[in-house]
Image 1 (cartoon, rainbow, N blue to C red):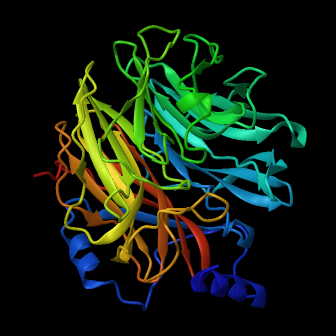
Image 2 (spheres, rainbow, N blue to C red):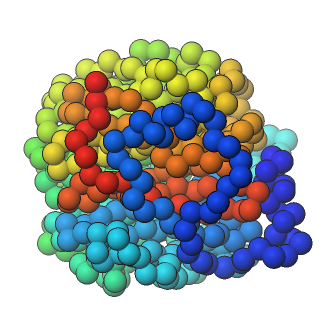
Length: 467
């Protein structure tokens, strides 16, 4: 544990910490913001119009895979979802809703209790205990909003990736349905999106064939069910891909589906892209790498790619450390060809970067967010810790901030800004959504000496800030 987390736990143990759920405004903070980040924040064309904070429980502090999700439907309903541990073998999905475009929010409401399943993974000389995670996901399109999550049915060992649909802005949802059949084994590291043609797309990793492999299902039009899942890629020699990085999925207006993932090939952890044939039965072509620069890393960085379609161009963001430092890269290609030229999103930044997310709004403008250290990036390790797994955002140093940049459809991003930096706070794992009127909503987890919170901000709509 880092010093900041240990201190947070100690404060909570002493008492005086407001347990449970509460909303409050921006706290006053005495710690100064680093000058570079203060300058970056002032450069922003999009002021932070709303900042809301929701206190999590002490048990959530180390649940680094449980991150918030956010979506806005075509009527301007804003929904934020996250999971909190409410029992030894239980997490609860909480929903935060606004019915007026994000000007006002009701209090977070518990929506569903989700059992946790704990299991062991054995390798020569050791056994490790793991548990399932809820991983809430949100997406919206054409009057509907979908919520996806992972649930251990009756406490396990059967684990399902479930999706439910709302047609009233998240006030109520249909009965959940499984996105896959009975062969799935502990699905996780999920993705949920709606395609340009309105099709609901879900992807996940599961271990039905011993290694972690990516699968995809498409929603059946006119119903809440799903078609048969398709294997996206078996992995090198059929042994699977990088086992603990989230996937990303996008679908074109022409009916081709794209799944981005981190591969594991000859010790390299590079991002690959698989493309399906057009149509509702998605047979995938062999995947292609999005970069020729190999990142040799004997571990899993827990940091997946992000996809977005803008017109006839497909865009990607991902973290890579082939130079020795964790940096966020962008690349794009016209469709149907897949020819990418990677470049750093923020070349002037010195901090370690990770967990990028990308979205395109109705005008084709791209919005990118990621987390970045307030200190200069140290050299990245090439050996994974924690039994072959290494997180890309260690909680050390002066903190981390959520960064934001925009681009027109050419994929060249303009100046970067820090959204709401606080020295000593670790802002991690952002999620992003854009409303029909151009408001940008960004949610993230934040840890400091007072504990852990979900933070939500709304940025005012402006013209894209780009070079």
